Image (cartoon, rainbow, N blue to C red; front, side, top):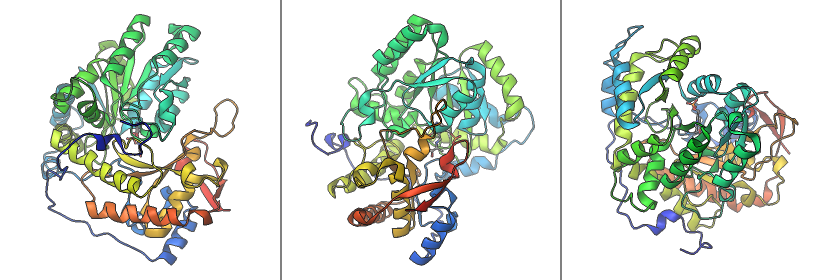
Length: 470
Ligand code: PLI
């Protein structure tokens, strides 16, 4: 494999068609408003795609979070909701599914991922402790910081370069991790935070060899390892595809083995697990579980519903079992790759290799004339919406927020616009329309001047910030 080629790593592997292992039973009409109306809607939304009304959006690639289509089995499960306040039978179905497919002993349901992040951060982090992780995620880092932790990025350097081809760009750099432990002392490390298919790096996977080595190093120093399991099924797909010795192992087997190298995990089930709402936290340690169970009743709800209805728990239990089917995940990643390959063929700069849940447009390369403070990725998201009503998301300087100590903007190396593909929702023809819109924006890129931020919320500013055109 030539490191210079822009071919995605996925293209190097021979594969059969990824046609979806399902057919469509119900449809939801899409709405397309005129370009003039899109101009108005975008200005009213302060050039922030999070502030658009979904009625004004044609193809919604804002996020893959909670936007997937549930199966007929999941909808049938919704009718079997046991809405008892305590001890709902659906909780026990969910508990059994997590124990079977993720392998953890003790389960705490939460309303979504950040609910779980809040509980684990409060339970495990002592003020002033460091939390090394493979690149930050917005809500994860904020909860770690609100609990008094200091996040340290220990991902491999390759992850910060959109063009470098590496099979496992989500890997932890063991030297960076070890030197942090040596410098600060093991007692000052709260835990190692490992995310599967690293979102902000472009959905890049972690290898089995890497998580094994992280666990070994952590054990040596008496430090715990917790996973962000949000897109770990997608991570398992890349291990099956790329790592020696795993080509004949099922996704379910790989997932279980990966989790076995951790002490616990938190989950936004709105992604891999094919539900519109839900999350959980799972650990193997009884004492920690007791502490989490104490906290869940304060912040989420009783420990057998965690802020969710019984029907949501049932849909999640069924979604977990569907998510680990090999043919599901092959078609899921196949669709993302289809879009990536089209854009690559047309010379449009994207993050390589194509990751699990989205195509990330490289806004720095797209708009080389825009300095980062002019919000190139936010600008590109606005331009795509204007061109065709497609909604994408900024993952660059606006998402990176400010340095907790100095108050300056963080300037991430990656300045990306994310085209996130919801699961089981759009067709290949929708992907063609999206690719053509990106090409149209690329053709007029020289005319783009960028944005300035005119309103900045204190926390997670990218959700509600407002911008004006320069
Ligand atoms: O959106 P939540 O609270 O269910 O989950 C938070 C969360 C945690 N970890 C990771 C890796 C995420 O990607 C994540 C949420 N992601 C969103 C909303 C996204 O659009 O990527």
